[in-house]
Image (cartoon, rainbow, N blue to C red; front, side, top):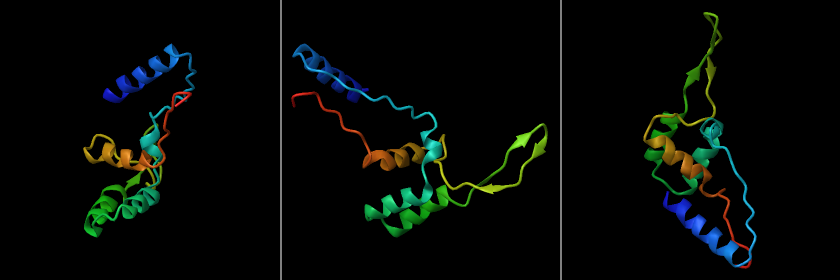
Length: 111
């Protein structure tokens, strides 16, 4: 919330000074499902985290299976190769780490 208030203050000041604001809206609704495990683990390794911590996170993310059910019939089990489990404390932290280096920075014209 604090970041939203900060950016709104910057945008307001920019507009009051005759500037222009360009924005891109991104829908993160399914973003948790799109995080490739292998890329996230590489990113964690680049931060020089302890090997045991990375192995623990690998166990949290990887080696999961899923299947679907339609009209009472189940599909075959398939490996889950992407996505961060929702409803966990670690999930949002891993998502933020994943987008950290790919975040889009905003700038008010003229700065």
